[in-house]
Length: 263
Image (tube, rainbow, N blue to C red; front, side, top):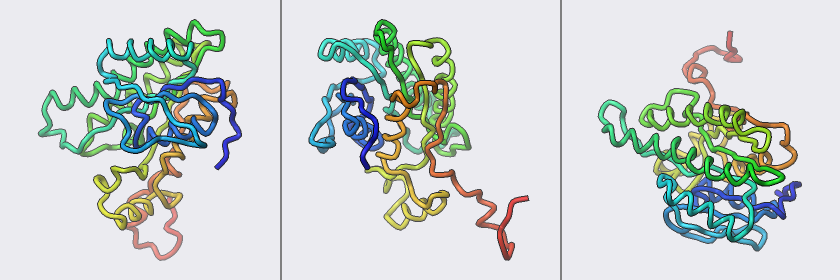
């Protein structure tokens, strides 16, 4: 799908931008013409490209404040500016809250909430000095807005990210716009780990109003929109990217003969 957004003179940093949702975000910005720098702890397993152009990769552990400062300094030294940041890096393995260790919970919150704040602080310091300012898009999750059994600390961190988004949007205005994408299930390299085989993935897709999991590029296009001039009056927003959401469980359990209408 061709994008009607031209970011040809813009520089974008995507954390965790080499695989999964992050790779989809990187490809969407490449398709819009932007220069894309993707950071992660290790390089991509396969090239991340779009329209004959590829990402620049920089290794970084975004939990390390010194490494983050070096990352932002390197981007500015190479390109002279930083226009857009997408805080995508994050995630969590399955672990029941009752038995997971204090250290486990702390690391999940650090990766999914505190690390994006570190990167945002460093990026904001650059954007505030630029005539055109900049934008930050935080990749959040529906897990922060509903029960998240097995990933409780992750859900709590994502809820925190959406609140952080609203706060930073006020603190850093008018130079920097800050928004989040509240993302539902996405079909990535890890889908089988979470949902089983293809039948399991398809079955999960059928619980979503639009009948499928998101593709990484679905998320990427929304990030491009929020970064673009088309969203110039959008800040502090949490955009739902969840395909209409999950069908309520009671609809599947109901024995009503027709309509299964909600009262």
